[in-house]
Image (cartoon, rainbow, N blue to C red; front, side, top):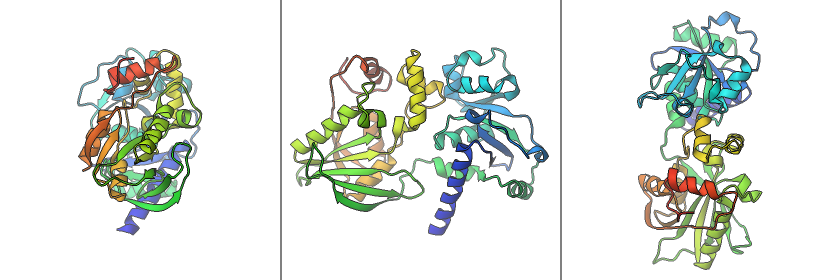
Length: 371
């Protein structure tokens, strides 16, 4: 089983790096139909040597969030849409997928695509590797799977089947083990320790900051804190991440201890580059939720199964959770962690994050005082 897992991990690494370099990947659906995809954000990259593959015309695949944010009607059962890529030049495709809905032709031949279709798989895969979930897809005329594999080997194209994509994107609790523990004196907690974790089938590095000793009578204070380079490191005033991080550490120290899980989920798990793209849309007047949607992402892409696995690896199954986000409570419960108490982290706003905090309260369900 470990060998098979390692082989799958290597395949995903190759797929991810190929897409992130602007290359093509072959995907196959449950019926064996195949297509070549590339990330639409690299549409200006020239592809050479693929003329003999019998490809159909490229189509542009967009998520339901993309389309809804552009003012189009989106049926509940349609996860993504496609339209002929020849309707655009390269510059227009790039601007469209980065949020400029005015470039979507009013009478474009837009088709709704079913779940599990090649366009749906393409968007899901790009989202999983933290690229804009918009794909350029060319269907292969070759139906025989052995011939598809032979073509992929000849042109050195990675192949990913639907069942492998489903395994990559499922929200099951991952295998998580403690790699090393070391002392980490902090300004807020001089006796803190850092615990590094290794997650199977992932390159993400999550860690825990452990402060003090657990009180046998009470579940420990716990915070799930998603990585925020701009807020935690640079002191950005656009969000409340940095103040929440430091306040949680101080409160844990003052109350005898706690555990802060620092999760590699930058930008609600869309990655740093896409977060800054969302910031640019916010500069243009969109709020934090609408900006994510205009890039094709969900409101919040985070899954907290790694956090549950980390807590269990630390021997914790019941916690007092420091959060304003009820989704964290419900997700931990889903994975078997009992939240005995939710403790709010209400902090002062500033002129730069006032609207952001309002959006969290009114659109994402955060339980914070009106600002």
